Image 1 (cartoon, rainbow, N blue to C red):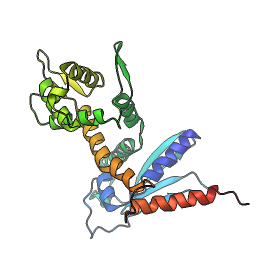
Image 2: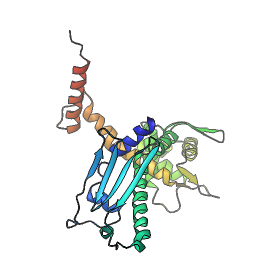
Image 3: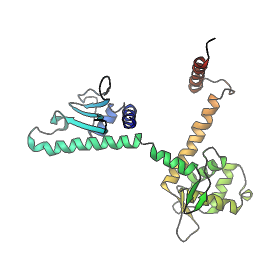
Image 4: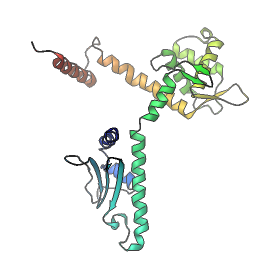
Length: 269
Protein backbone atom coordinates (compact mmCIF):
# COMPACT_ATOMS: atom_id res chain seq x y z
CA UNK A 1 0.00 0.00 0.00
CA UNK A 2 2.87 2.36 0.77
CA UNK A 3 4.40 1.70 -2.67
CA UNK A 4 1.08 2.29 -4.40
CA UNK A 5 0.68 5.56 -2.50
CA UNK A 6 4.15 6.66 -3.58
CA UNK A 7 3.42 5.82 -7.22
CA UNK A 8 0.10 7.65 -7.13
CA UNK A 9 1.97 10.64 -5.68
CA UNK A 10 4.44 10.49 -8.60
CA UNK A 11 1.55 10.51 -11.04
CA UNK A 12 -0.12 13.48 -9.32
CA UNK A 13 3.10 15.49 -9.26
CA UNK A 14 3.66 15.11 -13.01
CA UNK A 15 0.36 16.01 -14.57
CA UNK A 16 2.14 18.60 -16.73
CA UNK A 17 4.25 16.05 -18.60
CA UNK A 18 1.96 16.25 -21.62
CA UNK A 19 2.75 19.93 -22.22
CA UNK A 20 4.84 20.59 -25.34
CA UNK A 21 7.77 22.03 -23.36
CA UNK A 22 7.92 18.82 -21.29
CA UNK A 23 7.30 16.39 -24.14
CA UNK A 24 10.13 17.79 -26.24
CA UNK A 25 12.55 17.22 -23.36
CA UNK A 26 11.43 13.65 -22.77
CA UNK A 27 11.46 12.61 -26.43
CA UNK A 28 14.35 14.94 -27.33
CA UNK A 29 12.43 16.41 -30.25
CA UNK A 30 11.87 20.05 -31.12
CA UNK A 31 8.18 20.94 -30.99
CA UNK A 32 6.61 23.92 -32.74
CA UNK A 33 3.06 25.06 -33.29
CA UNK A 34 3.07 23.10 -36.54
CA UNK A 35 3.93 19.78 -34.86
CA UNK A 36 0.98 17.45 -35.53
CA UNK A 37 0.08 16.02 -32.15
CA UNK A 38 -2.39 16.29 -29.30
CA UNK A 39 -0.39 17.33 -26.27
CA UNK A 40 -2.01 16.09 -23.12
CA UNK A 41 -1.50 14.08 -19.96
CA UNK A 42 -4.10 11.44 -19.22
CA UNK A 43 -4.53 9.74 -15.86
CA UNK A 44 -6.69 6.62 -15.93
CA UNK A 45 -7.76 5.37 -12.52
CA UNK A 46 -11.41 4.44 -12.47
CA UNK A 47 -11.75 0.68 -11.98
CA UNK A 48 -8.13 -0.04 -12.95
CA UNK A 49 -4.60 0.34 -11.67
CA UNK A 50 -3.78 4.09 -11.87
CA UNK A 51 -1.73 4.87 -14.96
CA UNK A 52 -0.21 7.94 -16.55
CA UNK A 53 -0.22 8.46 -20.34
CA UNK A 54 1.86 11.03 -22.23
CA UNK A 55 1.43 11.34 -26.02
CA UNK A 56 3.82 12.53 -28.72
CA UNK A 57 2.38 12.26 -32.23
CA UNK A 58 1.65 8.50 -32.60
CA UNK A 59 3.95 7.49 -29.76
CA UNK A 60 3.12 7.16 -26.10
CA UNK A 61 4.67 6.73 -22.67
CA UNK A 62 2.66 4.81 -20.12
CA UNK A 63 3.44 4.49 -16.41
CA UNK A 64 1.57 2.27 -14.00
CA UNK A 65 1.86 0.13 -10.86
CA UNK A 66 2.94 -3.25 -12.25
CA UNK A 67 1.39 -6.19 -10.37
CA UNK A 68 1.64 -4.28 -7.09
CA UNK A 69 5.44 -4.56 -7.16
CA UNK A 70 7.01 -1.61 -8.98
CA UNK A 71 6.53 1.45 -11.15
CA UNK A 72 6.65 0.31 -14.78
CA UNK A 73 7.43 2.71 -17.61
CA UNK A 74 6.59 1.70 -21.18
CA UNK A 75 7.28 3.70 -24.34
CA UNK A 76 5.46 2.62 -27.48
CA UNK A 77 6.56 3.92 -30.88
CA UNK A 78 3.59 3.30 -33.17
CA UNK A 79 5.03 5.16 -36.16
CA UNK A 80 8.80 5.31 -36.61
CA UNK A 81 8.41 8.30 -38.93
CA UNK A 82 7.58 10.36 -35.83
CA UNK A 83 11.37 10.29 -35.38
CA UNK A 84 12.35 10.38 -39.07
CA UNK A 85 13.21 6.68 -39.11
CA UNK A 86 12.15 4.14 -41.71
CA UNK A 87 9.90 1.18 -40.98
CA UNK A 88 12.25 -1.64 -41.96
CA UNK A 89 13.55 -4.07 -39.32
CA UNK A 90 17.10 -2.77 -39.68
CA UNK A 91 15.96 0.38 -37.84
CA UNK A 92 14.81 -1.57 -34.77
CA UNK A 93 17.99 -0.83 -32.72
CA UNK A 94 17.50 2.91 -33.26
CA UNK A 95 13.84 2.70 -32.25
CA UNK A 96 14.90 0.77 -29.16
CA UNK A 97 17.46 3.46 -28.31
CA UNK A 98 14.82 6.21 -28.63
CA UNK A 99 12.41 4.36 -26.34
CA UNK A 100 14.97 3.63 -23.64
CA UNK A 101 16.31 7.20 -23.80
CA UNK A 102 12.82 8.64 -23.32
CA UNK A 103 12.25 6.31 -20.36
CA UNK A 104 15.52 7.28 -18.71
CA UNK A 105 14.92 11.01 -19.15
CA UNK A 106 11.42 10.71 -17.69
CA UNK A 107 12.58 8.67 -14.70
CA UNK A 108 15.48 11.06 -14.12
CA UNK A 109 13.09 14.02 -13.91
CA UNK A 110 10.75 12.13 -11.60
CA UNK A 111 13.52 10.94 -9.31
CA UNK A 112 14.65 14.53 -8.77
CA UNK A 113 11.15 15.96 -8.33
CA UNK A 114 9.57 13.26 -6.21
CA UNK A 115 12.34 12.05 -3.90
CA UNK A 116 12.05 14.17 -0.73
CA UNK A 117 14.70 12.20 1.14
CA UNK A 118 17.65 14.20 -0.20
CA UNK A 119 16.11 17.54 0.81
CA UNK A 120 15.08 16.15 4.19
CA UNK A 121 18.58 14.81 4.79
CA UNK A 122 20.20 18.15 3.97
CA UNK A 123 17.69 20.08 6.08
CA UNK A 124 18.29 17.85 9.10
CA UNK A 125 22.06 17.98 8.67
CA UNK A 126 22.02 21.77 8.59
CA UNK A 127 19.20 22.67 10.97
CA UNK A 128 19.86 20.10 13.71
CA UNK A 129 22.86 19.40 15.95
CA UNK A 130 25.47 17.18 14.33
CA UNK A 131 28.28 14.95 15.57
CA UNK A 132 31.27 14.23 13.32
CA UNK A 133 34.06 12.00 14.62
CA UNK A 134 32.84 12.60 18.19
CA UNK A 135 32.94 16.36 17.65
CA UNK A 136 29.58 17.98 18.19
CA UNK A 137 28.28 21.14 16.55
CA UNK A 138 25.10 22.94 17.51
CA UNK A 139 22.21 23.34 15.07
CA UNK A 140 22.09 26.12 12.49
CA UNK A 141 18.41 26.82 13.06
CA UNK A 142 16.59 28.36 10.13
CA UNK A 143 14.78 31.01 12.22
CA UNK A 144 17.83 32.03 14.27
CA UNK A 145 19.02 35.58 13.41
CA UNK A 146 22.59 34.42 13.97
CA UNK A 147 22.19 31.65 11.40
CA UNK A 148 20.61 34.01 8.88
CA UNK A 149 23.46 36.50 9.38
CA UNK A 150 26.06 33.75 8.92
CA UNK A 151 24.40 32.44 5.78
CA UNK A 152 24.00 35.94 4.32
CA UNK A 153 27.69 36.59 4.94
CA UNK A 154 28.67 33.28 3.34
CA UNK A 155 26.74 34.03 0.15
CA UNK A 156 28.86 37.16 -0.31
CA UNK A 157 32.06 35.09 -0.56
CA UNK A 158 31.04 32.66 -3.30
CA UNK A 159 32.69 34.88 -5.94
CA UNK A 160 36.09 34.98 -4.20
CA UNK A 161 38.45 32.58 -6.03
CA UNK A 162 40.68 32.00 -2.99
CA UNK A 163 38.03 31.91 -0.29
CA UNK A 164 37.92 34.06 2.84
CA UNK A 165 39.60 34.39 6.20
CA UNK A 166 38.02 34.70 9.62
CA UNK A 167 38.46 38.48 9.70
CA UNK A 168 36.49 38.95 6.47
CA UNK A 169 33.64 36.72 7.60
CA UNK A 170 33.60 38.48 10.95
CA UNK A 171 33.12 41.90 9.36
CA UNK A 172 30.28 40.75 7.10
CA UNK A 173 28.64 38.72 9.87
CA UNK A 174 28.67 41.69 12.24
CA UNK A 175 27.18 43.97 9.60
CA UNK A 176 24.21 41.65 9.06
CA UNK A 177 23.62 41.60 12.83
CA UNK A 178 23.81 45.39 13.01
CA UNK A 179 26.98 45.26 15.12
CA UNK A 180 30.53 46.48 14.72
CA UNK A 181 33.25 43.81 14.20
CA UNK A 182 34.75 44.71 17.58
CA UNK A 183 31.60 43.46 19.28
CA UNK A 184 32.28 39.92 18.06
CA UNK A 185 35.31 38.21 19.56
CA UNK A 186 37.71 35.93 17.63
CA UNK A 187 36.63 33.08 19.92
CA UNK A 188 33.01 33.53 18.82
CA UNK A 189 34.03 33.43 15.15
CA UNK A 190 36.13 30.32 15.75
CA UNK A 191 33.02 28.71 17.24
CA UNK A 192 30.90 29.65 14.21
CA UNK A 193 33.55 28.50 11.72
CA UNK A 194 33.71 25.16 13.48
CA UNK A 195 29.94 24.81 13.25
CA UNK A 196 29.97 25.61 9.54
CA UNK A 197 32.78 23.12 8.90
CA UNK A 198 31.18 20.24 10.79
CA UNK A 199 27.88 20.86 9.02
CA UNK A 200 29.70 20.55 5.71
CA UNK A 201 29.00 24.10 4.50
CA UNK A 202 32.61 25.26 4.31
CA UNK A 203 36.03 23.58 4.01
CA UNK A 204 39.42 24.81 5.07
CA UNK A 205 41.97 25.43 2.31
CA UNK A 206 44.94 23.10 3.05
CA UNK A 207 47.99 24.72 4.66
CA UNK A 208 46.22 28.05 5.14
CA UNK A 209 43.75 29.92 7.32
CA UNK A 210 41.34 30.45 4.44
CA UNK A 211 37.97 28.81 3.90
CA UNK A 212 35.80 28.15 0.85
CA UNK A 213 32.14 27.26 0.53
CA UNK A 214 31.14 23.81 -0.60
CA UNK A 215 28.54 23.58 -3.37
CA UNK A 216 26.04 22.29 -0.83
CA UNK A 217 26.99 25.10 1.55
CA UNK A 218 26.47 27.84 -1.02
CA UNK A 219 23.15 26.47 -2.21
CA UNK A 220 21.82 25.84 1.29
CA UNK A 221 22.87 29.30 2.48
CA UNK A 222 21.48 31.04 -0.60
CA UNK A 223 18.19 29.14 -0.52
CA UNK A 224 17.57 29.62 3.20
CA UNK A 225 18.37 33.34 3.22
CA UNK A 226 16.14 34.02 0.23
CA UNK A 227 13.36 31.84 1.60
CA UNK A 228 13.50 33.62 4.96
CA UNK A 229 13.64 37.14 3.49
CA UNK A 230 11.20 36.79 0.60
CA UNK A 231 8.72 34.12 1.73
CA UNK A 232 8.81 33.39 5.46
CA UNK A 233 8.88 36.93 6.87
CA UNK A 234 6.55 38.70 4.42
CA UNK A 235 4.24 35.68 4.27
CA UNK A 236 3.72 35.65 8.03
CA UNK A 237 3.21 39.41 7.97
CA UNK A 238 0.39 38.95 5.48
CA UNK A 239 -1.41 36.06 7.19
CA UNK A 240 -1.01 37.04 10.85
CA UNK A 241 -4.45 37.77 12.33
CA UNK A 242 -3.25 41.02 13.95
CA UNK A 243 -1.69 42.36 10.75
CA UNK A 244 -3.22 45.33 8.96
CA UNK A 245 -5.76 44.29 6.36
CA UNK A 246 -4.26 44.22 2.87
CA UNK A 247 -5.35 43.25 -0.62
CA UNK A 248 -3.02 40.24 -0.49
CA UNK A 249 -4.41 37.13 -2.19
CA UNK A 250 -2.52 35.07 0.37
CA UNK A 251 -4.27 36.85 3.26
CA UNK A 252 -7.66 36.45 1.59
CA UNK A 253 -7.04 32.72 1.03
CA UNK A 254 -6.01 32.21 4.66
CA UNK A 255 -9.05 34.13 5.89
CA UNK A 256 -11.33 31.87 3.83
CA UNK A 257 -9.50 28.78 5.08
CA UNK A 258 -9.81 29.94 8.69
CA UNK A 259 -13.50 30.65 8.22
CA UNK A 260 -14.13 27.17 6.80
CA UNK A 261 -12.18 25.49 9.61
CA UNK A 262 -14.17 27.45 12.20
CA UNK A 263 -17.45 26.41 10.52
CA UNK A 264 -16.37 22.77 10.41
CA UNK A 265 -15.25 22.78 14.04
CA UNK A 266 -18.43 24.42 15.33
CA UNK A 267 -20.58 21.81 17.03
CA UNK A 268 -24.29 22.28 16.23
CA UNK A 269 -26.40 22.94 19.31
